[in-house]
Every structure is written in C-alpha cells, then in structure tokens.
Length: 303
Ligand code: PMP
Image (cartoon, rainbow, N blue to C red; front, top):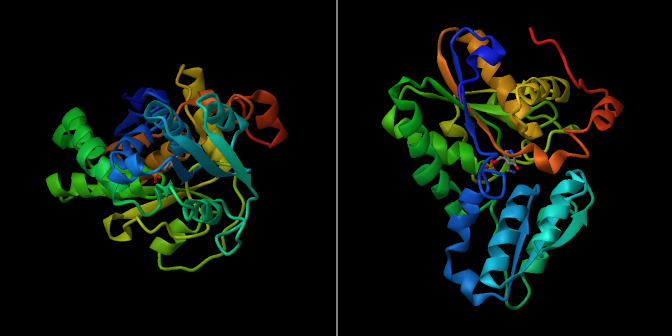
C-alpha cells in the first residue's frame, strides 16, 4: 500500500501489510515453515515462547494438527492476544517481565517445558525455518510487488527472522538496497549495531526490540537503525487509524523509522513492514482510555 500522501513525505513510502494474513500477523509465515517439520508429527505437544503473534498462529495450526499447544508469553503483552490463543485452544503461561538471566523469563520457561517427553519446543528465536520463511517468501514477494525501484526496507526485530530473511533476499537481487532496523527506545538492538553496549529500558511497543541479542538477527545485513519512542509510534498509529488502517504498535515504530530514513534520504523509495492487525490491541493500543492513561496521543495533527 502506498502511504506517501497520508504521511506527506518527500519520496515514496510503501507499506507491506501483514495485518490481513490469516491470523492477522506476519507470523503465519514462519509458523507454516516451522511446523512443517518431523518433530511436529513426533510430538503430542508443541511449546513456543512468543510475543503473542506466533502464539496465535501456532494455536490455530496446532488445533488443525490435533496437537496440544502451550504458549509462554510476557505479561507485558496485550490481553487480546491471550484471548485469541485461548479461543484457538492453546494454553497460555503468562510470565513476569524479567530478562533472560531469570528462570521465570518466558523463553526460559518454554525451554524447560520443551525438555519434557513428547514435547517439542519450536524455538522461533533459533529455528532456521523462521529465516527461511522470509528469505523464500516475504522477500521475493516484496520484490515482485515493488520491483526494482526499492531503495530501503524497514522492519522491527523480535526474533530477527523478518529482517534477516527479507534482508538477505533483497540484497541478493539488489546489492545496493538498505536494510534498516526500526527499534523502540529502550531496546538495545540499535545501540548494538552502533557498537555500543547499553542497558535496556522499559517501553510499551509489543513484539520488537529487547534486552538481549536475538540469535537469528544478522547484524551484518543491517545498514542502519532508527530508535522510535512509544509516543511517536502511537502518533503514527493514530494517523493510520484515521485512514482506516488498524495495525499494531510495532507498525507505528516501523513507520517512524521509515519516515526518519526519508528525512535523511529525501526522494527515495522505502517499504516498511506492518507486522500485525489492531484487533488484538482493542484494550490497549486501540483504546482511547488506555492511550490517554499512558500519556500517548489518541490523535495528532501530523507534521
Ligand atoms: N511486530 C510484531 C507485532 C511482532 O509480534 C513481531 C514478532 N515478535 C515482530 C514485529 C518482529 O518479527 P521478527 O520476529 O521476525 O523479528
């Protein structure tokens, strides 16, 4: 979708909309690739650590395959995600918002559950099928849709599967293309790319950034990063909402980074990946009271 006019940029701002996929997020792609694995057939239960979207997609896939699905997720994430996973028959284990050094961290809990007999921990943070789904699917799709005029691709990184897979696919076809990370203020990933070591801080945007380096994120594929705070992400979401495009919080961050790239590189063509739908954020990022209560803009006249 062309968002150039909506955001009034100098250049071309395109969005790759993943909110309209089957379960409403980009995660249908890696989930399809990851469950296509003999370990799925061999297990009675599949376990995954998720920011919610992989969990929703895996819950639906697991139900179809007749598997028990257990999803571990940090309490920070929207309750709408829990509801969707439970509606699809998955069990959700909510974990405290603590780092990887704590045994209570959602990834560590999934790892422990996955060590039990007959249980498979899908492990999107280390599963190469996650990257392959984007290198073979999302990346070539973007090239087919946008053609050779693309200068830059922008996305956030949770597992890093999207940026690594799409980045490699695009660079194979167009070596000069720039791959840019959209990182929330509070995440350590953008600082790491600059060669700095920083402590992570809190932020409200869901599904991207973090306080550890995701093993699948190939920093060599990245050409730059922009750090976007919650306030700016919410402002862009408000603009999209007014235009009838209801997407999740990480999409606001991706738009922020794409706009920053166009400010630095006027006239270029950039594609931002909008990773999920707004329907799972009805009590949070799509709710006026929640936004106001967190000091975030509901509507803003855009510059
Ligand atoms: N946006 C949202 C809303 C997500 O849930 C995720 C995945 N956690 C991403 C972006 C990032 O995708 P990836 O895991 O491929 O880096």
